[in-house]
View 1: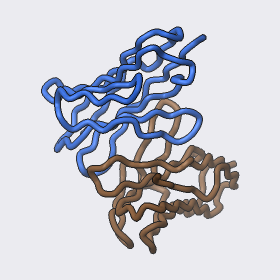
View 2: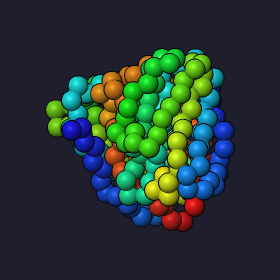
View 3: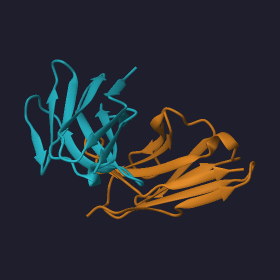
Length: 109
Length: 112
């Protein structure tokens, strides 16, 4: 059975800190790994990763995939209170997305 | 921009009622999905559809059915609502199975 595990489950940091969120996966027929941000509404798409070692970057957020060790990380530098959200990781085997339970990030002023 | 809309943001129904949740996307996407999201359990796939009139069961299809008569519209049906179906329901669409999914705003359903 496909499995996606995120860690930590929750995290509290101060504004300006850098955070690293982890996602490990066990997926048959792996196609891609996706990251979403969810505030008090629907998840919004951040990144899709298909190749090992190639960093995807958007502003202060970046992500990388390691297909050998079966994990991905999401980095957020110089955090702001607006980064407070649940971050979801999902694997795609070409069937449907399989989501982890998410990491709840709280950035305090 | 992709737009996925859902018919209601909040819905309250009684046990035993038939409930329809509607989802519409405007990007001509082939695939559409229904998830439910519960605290501690994350997002779980109920049903998905990869073409008009086609449907496949997800991980938790029991108690639900779906309908896709037009490409842009995907409906989730609770034949006889029960209290354990109280949840946030999220619809999503994607161009095909390997591309990212885009989510609607969600419907928070309460069954009393």
